[in-house]
Length: 140
Image 1: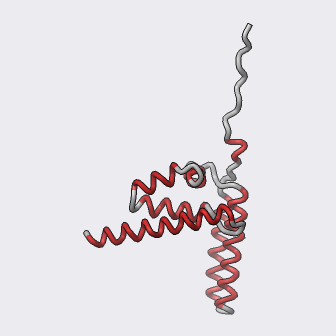
Image 2: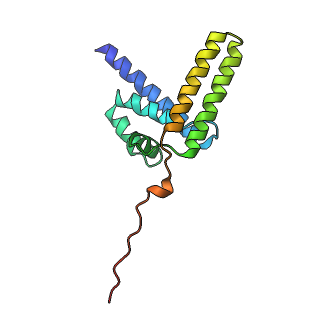
Image 3: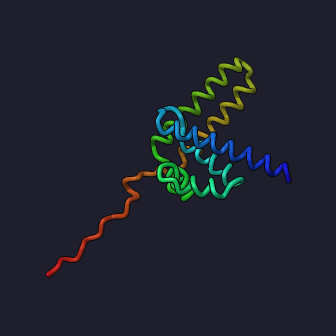
């Protein structure tokens, strides 16, 4: 039973760190937001109903998760920052490893795969998701 408590505490801690990184991503241009909030939602879903509900219903953070999970997609800004961060970190990793062909090949394959996935995601356009105004009947 104690192992479950440690696992739960670790997942809550990791979820909270991911929320913090996601919030930073809202303000820093190359820092992704959605990825970290999705990781936080996963960690919380496996450890704390209270934290998971809070995150999904949060007025600033919940929209990132709900638009993705509902199939509405992610914004252009989220796509661009995710891809820039991905390729910068993969490029740094390839440079750091320095010349090991098989490692470079694996990292490039991962980056290409994730890039394809991100580009295939539906692009969420908040201005189009608002309900259209309906004409009010004229009073005689």
